[in-house]
Structures are given as structure tokens and as C-alpha cells.
Image 1 (cartoon, rainbow, N blue to C red):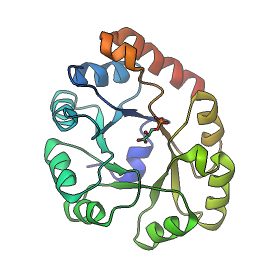
Image 2 (spheres, helix red, strand yellow):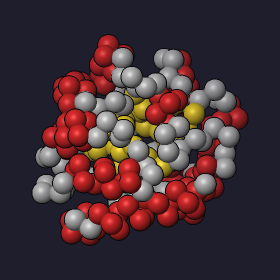
Image 3 (cartoon, helix red, strand yellow):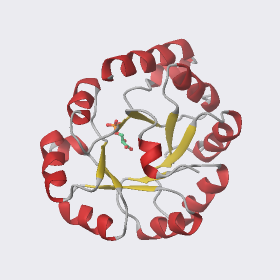
Image 4 (cartoon, rainbow, N blue to C red):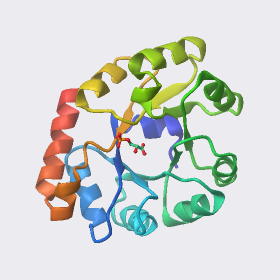
Length: 208
Ligand code: 3PG
């Protein structure tokens, strides 16, 4: 089992996936992986999300699959049973934190203020998601967070694109960003895995 720092080091970008019903989640994760991105966050925003996590986890051993938009303990238990290796929430959720602690699964909660960051640090978390990063204040805000809480790692997510990703990744306390822009909806609906792979590849090239 990977810890949060190992998970955040897999790739400079964690693709945030909202997988519509009917889309082959394994092919999606495989295309990202063929393009060099061996991690995916499947958000619980579509009915097939938990099945998608289960399928990716059993079919692709080299891909680290996590669950996103996890708001309650029941969903947290279910995604862990399905094979999720990390859990992300848009905000800190105490009950999800407790399930993750009990099941020894890394938890990456979202936050938008230094007060919340201090709370997460107090609980012993070493990394947090800043969400929605651009509205919170972009790279300048994360720089300010890190100047007072330098031991935390920050994963900016929300409104991130390729250009902004480079600005965030230039900061010492940012090892990766999250974003849905690498997974284009029209491409996955069309099953155009070659384009998904190429976008992943181009994204990595530009971020390295
Ligand atoms: C998330 O759940 O982290 C966000 O929806 C991702 O934000 P983005 O779609 O602006 O990349």
C-alpha cells in the first residue's frame, strides 16, 4: 500500500475523471497509463463510479486508482472495498477521515483556508488538496499557505490547465496538481483512446 507522498509523486498531474455511464473505465485508465500517467481519481459523481474503480483496480495493477468527491463514511467504505488506494474529498469530512484512518488508506481532503490547513496538519495529515485552487487565489495563495505551514504538501485542483499547472508545480510544496482537463469528455464518449493517450503524453512532456 502506498502512502500519500508516494501517491502524489506518481505523476505531476492526477487526472480527475467524471466517467459517464457506458464509457469503458478500464480503457480510459489504460490510455492515460499508455501516455505515462499511472494514476486516476474517479469521482463519485456518476452512477458507475464505484464499478469503474473496481474494474480499474482489478484490471490494471500498475495504475493507482483513487476515489474523489467522497462525502460520507458509507461511500468511503465502499470505494475502499472496490480497490481505491486513496480518497479525495472537496472538503475535510470527519467521518471519511475516520474511515481512512481505520482502513489505513491515504486521505486527501480539500480546503480553501489556512484555518482548515492548520486543522489538517494538527490531525497529522501531510498533504491536502486546495480547492477550488484558482478561486482560492492560485499559486500566490499556495505560496502564502506554505509560508506558514511549510510541512504540508498542497495539491491544487479546480480550474487548473496546462499553463497554470506549470506555475503551481514551480512551487516547493506542490508535487502534483489535479484536474479534469486531461480527460476530454467528447473523446471518452467516442472511445477515442488514441487521443486520450496523446493528450496524456503531451501534457507530461510539457510539464517536465
Ligand atoms: C475536482 O473534483 O477536483 C474538480 O472538479 C476538478 O476541477 P476541474 O474540473 O476544474 O479540473
